Amino acid sequence: PTSASDWLLLPMKEPTQKDIAIGALGSALAGAIDDIVIRQNEDEVEGPITFIGMDTPHLPLEAVRESIYESSKNPSKAFICPATDGGYVLMSIPPAVGRTIPASEIFKNVSWSTSKACITQETALISAGIKVSFGSTYLDVDELEDLIVLQQELNSKAAFHSPRVRRFLLSNEKNLQQFLSREH
Image (cartoon, rainbow, N blue to C red; front, side, top):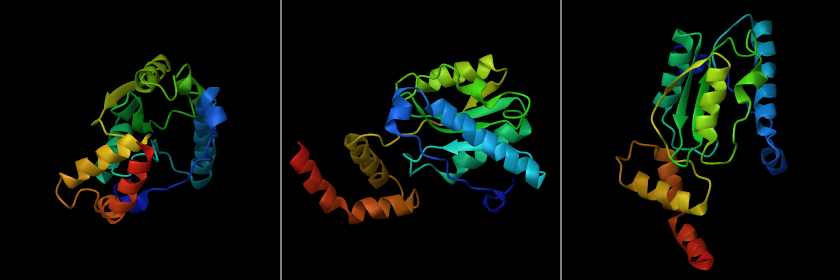
């Protein structure tokens, strides 16, 4: 896909906290890949599949484009943007996953919701025969403290960086401060 209008955006069925705790997140992601591959086959298209974490509202579109481009130009390469906490915020996988490489293979032994999620994801991909390249590292917003860091980060950058997220945080700054004062 050369432009965002060529992308097919599909929400994934959200796993529960229990699923994550018992390691079923990988199964949910593998199931999503299988569903997408079925849809791609019906539409007679083939391309990389990209997972974007919902806890990174400030992820630049350019990072998504780069991930899709990297996984499109090399059919045996995945692309990951790590998170500052050891997880990852974005992963594009090549079209072979779900076709010649079982989707479940790329999530084997991934340590979800830990500081080792990204490195164990890389290991699983390599074990499945997929090379991995990395993009920039981003903050993901898992805790209230992360939201504060995000707000400070966006306030220190030019207004064009994540303008909607920045406006939302600025318009809710008073509420956020009140909430923080009650929590601490």
